[in-house]
Image 1 (tube, rainbow, N blue to C red):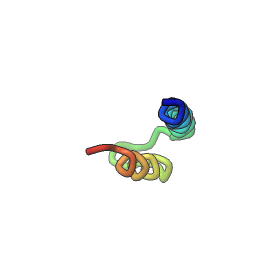
Image 2 (cartoon, helix red, strand yellow):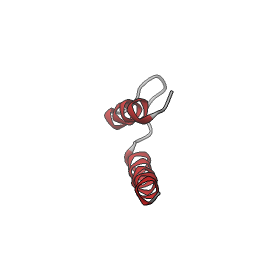
Image 3 (spheres, helix red, strand yellow):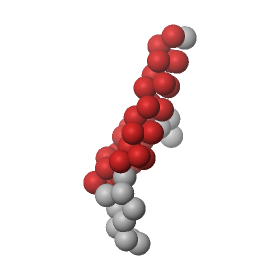
Image 4 (tube, helix red, strand yellow):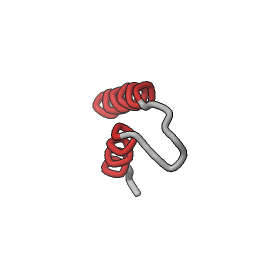
Length: 47
C-alpha cells in the first residue's frame, strides 16, 4: 500500500514538473518534453 502511494505521489510530481516546463507551441507542433511525457504515459498506462 505504501509503495502504491509513493509511486502515485512521484508520478504526480513528475507530471506537474513536465507540464510546468512545456512551452506553448505553434498549432500542430509539440515540444520534446511533450513527446517524452506521451512516451512515459504510454509505458505506465494500464491500457
